[in-house]
Amino acid sequence: MSKLNIALIGAGRRGGGAHLPVIAKLKDVYNLVAICDIDQAVAQQYAEQYGATPYTNVRDLVAHEKLDAVDITVPGVAHHAIACFMADAGVNIIVETPIAVTLPMTDLMIEAAQRNSVKLEVAENYYRAPRERFLSTVIDAGVIGEVGRIYRIFYEGGYHGMSMLRLRANGEPKSILGIAQSTPVIPIIDRMKRHHTSDNWTFGFLEFDNNATALMVYSNVIHARSLGRGQGGISQIDGSKGTIVGEDIHVVPPEDLESGAKSVGYQPKRTMINVDGTEVIEKIELELPDQLITWENPLRHYPLTEGQIPVADELLSLANAILNNTEPKYGAQLGRQDQEMNIAMSESAKQSRVTLNFPLTDLTETERGIHDNYEGQHGHPIDDVEAGIDVFFPRQ
Ligand SMILES: NC(=O)c1ccc[n+]([C@@H]2O[C@H](COP(=O)([O-])OP(=O)(O)OC[C@H]3O[C@@H](n4cnc5c(N)ncnc54)[C@H](O)[C@@H]3O)[C@@H](O)[C@H]2O)c1
Image (tube, rainbow, N blue to C red; front, side):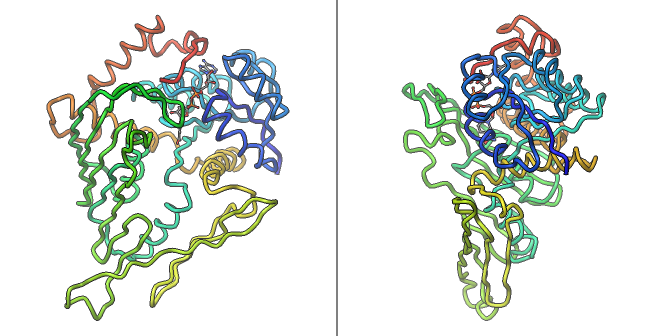
């Protein structure tokens, strides 16, 4: 297999911290040629560390490198400008989440990718985690029956949460009710170095076309696990035959169905192997009285930690799409749908808790506010890609 030349754009926490070590481990697929960051010291530091060429702007990057792919890990508000520019340069793209902050920004990216026949993958990592892949295998095997209700409380929300809720509901979203409240907190900097001065809390209630429903409670402070918030997250998937609580799979022995229907909680077992000094998940198994359910890690030959497996999976999804001229596994449309659901939750809250139906057809107040803010702050409209790529976008 020929190797693909890749550059990473935005070597901050997610780029330098999470993606670069994984790209380096996928050396049979990717050749990391360049690191581009508007902050020269950052570009220099990571380029030296990974033996790549540093750049401080994407114009120089495309002028000097022959690229097959770029990994865009700049702040979300900059995704559309950088992605459109790279697509116009004929380079395939993987972009961090959210795909973009509004739907018109997302559509600019999708149109640019289509216009230039380049692949566009979204680095949605939550469903790619071994734990979630294993739970998907359990649900697909019918262990808990038909999923009717999903609770994700004090877990990650936003577009990641929406992605998970849609996956677990196994249906298309029909409508959403959102409630939001903002309360002050003392100024804090979380473990990811994000700054918070308020707790922006949201509650979402979703209905799917297959009658499944989902309930989500989220806030930036819960996500940060700061101030003691969200220490005990509640993840519960209720099915017609059983329930998944966290990682425990609850089913009722047939003889107990008419005498209390108390469940037995089964815990999955992880088998680890050592690959080049890294403890790697080989498989996760669930032993039920009449069934053995196994999820095998397809990337078990790579020295990847549990947290690195989703990042490798998304990077390999793009590589496969490029090499076989197929569509990436997640792709822009699902990334767009996650953000559509997320925006709709905010918008419902803004519109005094009106239930909104999908798909959203008009520009929301939420998005209009983001566009106005963007133009006010940077002095150009969102579709001025040439101006956008030169802006330094700091993380909020
Ligand atoms: N999937 C996940 O679980 C997850 C987790 C955290 C962050 N993210 C996403 O990853 C992305 C990056 O987040 P982060 O925390 O690493 O941000 P960050 O601020 O730490 O890093 C972003 C980097 O981009 C650089 N940059 C800014 N504007 C630029 C420009 N015009 N050209 C080139 N470089 C530029 C900055 O100098 C910085 O080094 C965001 O989209 C965020 O939403 C995803």
